[in-house]
Image 1 (cartoon, rainbow, N blue to C red):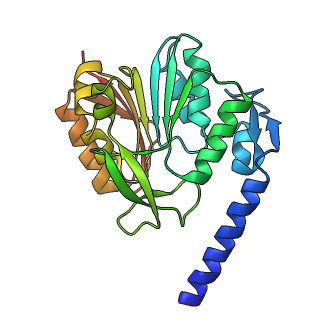
Image 2: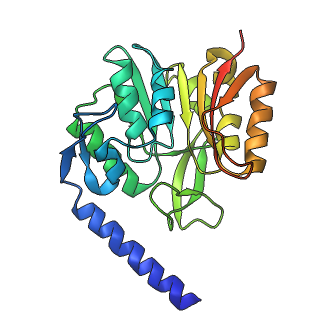
Length: 244
């Protein structure tokens, strides 16, 4: 088993090096809500083809207005960051949070080559309180996650701490996709959720985590809908709005 793990790590390292080398090569997105933007193909072919999460993209677009402030927690390579940037326009702001170095390189590249000047990138994970945490990168680029056994140390911030110190404005919408750390993000955003009442666009991972998030939303006066019908043990995509 250790030999197989070592081989997997070597393949993973080679893949990361190859992706870094191909970072300069960007192509126009062919269709979809980001049509015409430039995108690094090696970061994901569905992005360039314009076929990435069409249902969720439409739901997201329906929640964001010109002039809004959007937090993208778990920004990955920047798909929803870019979509939010286009939707909020020059009057709005997008704050993108991403701790994984490889993803950050793609995220920064996509923001720069498309001149998304209303985007601020924060090189950090988001949790219940500020500090540091371990992060697991021996996964696909979209599935890295906070883990006590993680191979990388990352900076951790909380949304309430940033807000109380005036480093971020009140958000209109918070998108959260953090591979199982949703409860920690929400635990560190109670003041923002209480005062700003943002729309929440959350990917939950695992049935136990999903139920905990649903209980949190109900306790904080939110109604919700599932964007896709999936099995009880599958990851879920949740759109939550504050009750009137």
